[in-house]
Amino acid sequence: MNCGHFYNVGHYAGLRFNEDNAHGQCIHCNKHLHGNLIEYRDNLFMKLGAERFENLKLKALYYKRCGHKSHRFEIEQRIEELKAKLVLVK
Image (cartoon, rainbow, N blue to C red; front, side, top):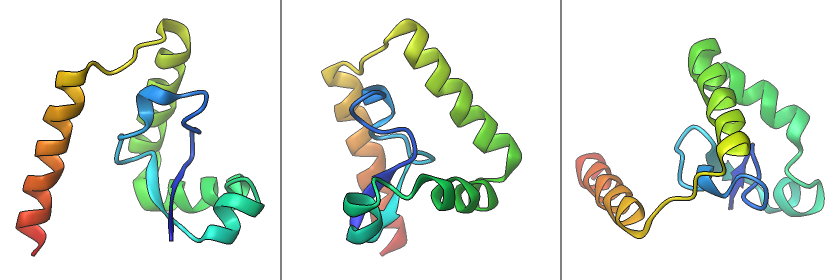
């Protein structure tokens, strides 16, 4: 299992840790089919719904236009948020 990104990290580094952009993906699709983006898009739309899917698209457009990169404290804060979610799931 790999972490697949709809908006790839090479071009959209600011969306690397976005939960709507990062999902489990089989190694074959992620590596050999370069993300299998047509299937990924269709499944992502069904999973997120129209509003969240559109919001992700807008975040990607904003990132491309403004080039925002996360600062260290933002990443550390995000890590703590995700750790708290893991505790709730266990």
